[in-house]
Length: 320
Ligand SMILES: [Zn+2]
Image 1: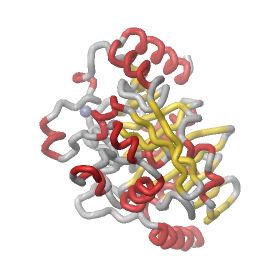
Image 2: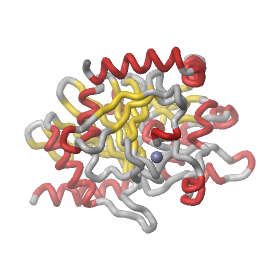
Image 3: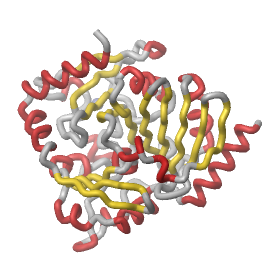
């Protein structure tokens, strides 16, 4: 059976057999959302109370060491089942496709490695591209260890059904600047609305991997970090991969730490940067306007100036 077919069956099975997942997906049908324009890009804000577990997750080293890892097979609820996925080139290290019990998307997957290994993307863009191709209809995403991942100690991707994130269909609102094109491989940067965003498009997996590797090698690893701070979205449509790469400079925005009225409990990750800001608290949902979104983007992703500087470094390297 194909991977996508097995995944669809897993969904149906889990939603009927697992009460917590079933009721959270049911509740998702009733969540409130609003559209907020930011420099011509149609962001959404979703009020999603069940996501408090992720947005407020304690991800400091001590808290992580003291909790039982919820992605390790031994600690998962007995009702949770999974579908095995193996990336052929890394056959000794299988992944498990799981239904995410705290959904943002009507179909939301978590895809951990079987082994308890740190969240690091290096060497794993291959399986991400392969999964994006095999799980047709899904967008894959990766949150770096201090970029929204609530299990920075256990490597995992996530995936959500396509047609949900504005970024998939509204790139015309970003004034994309073409930095590089050879054959069917292109690299763009957004010059409007979302700072720190590069988009790679390719119809060949080795070329997509190579271009990603080149950009990765030019990114700064900040003090105390184990990899350049980033979020990645990736989908495959009509033979072409799109990879959206958000270059981060900060984990949580200052709003997260403010006292009183100015506090907004938000911990931006791939989904937020892809156009859907998740607020687990109603007071924050009401508060979020274009100016809050603009402030948050300006804080957590590198500035447009830094994006331009990085773009010229990439161009120089590609010209060699
Ligand atoms: Zn684990």
